[in-house]
Image (cartoon, rainbow, N blue to C red; front, side, top):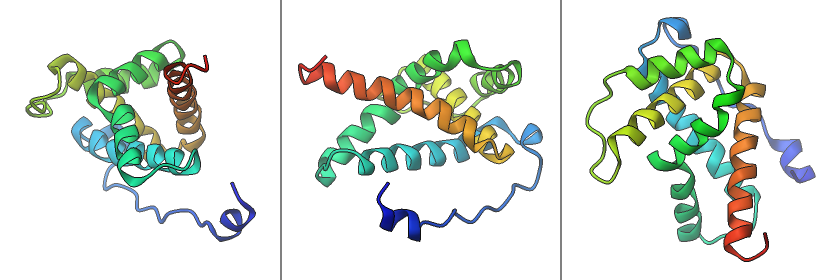
Length: 152
């Protein structure tokens, strides 16, 4: 991060939910988790190699699609705590509506579970844990890009 950015960045305002995260509907946790995940992905892309806006969008889509989110959840699975596994199960088993036409229903359920976990961790204030999980995503994604470009 540049010195200028460090000097001017402030934490985002935080408004806690009306209930504890444990009592929130998994769809509500996924709704928040989707926004948190998307923001972190966009920040990562903007902080990295200079990309044009349409390239940013294409790159973000490759990380936030239901298929990609299923992959990230599978990547995280071995390191999830029992509590986190329970949150994932709640998210996976919830009725979250019809998946988009271009999404596999199984991928969509696992993507909802992943977003549910991110929302839960966000509302629990476990920012460092989110950073750990996202670091694994970005490491894997960056490695994929290197291989695609013939550098891996």
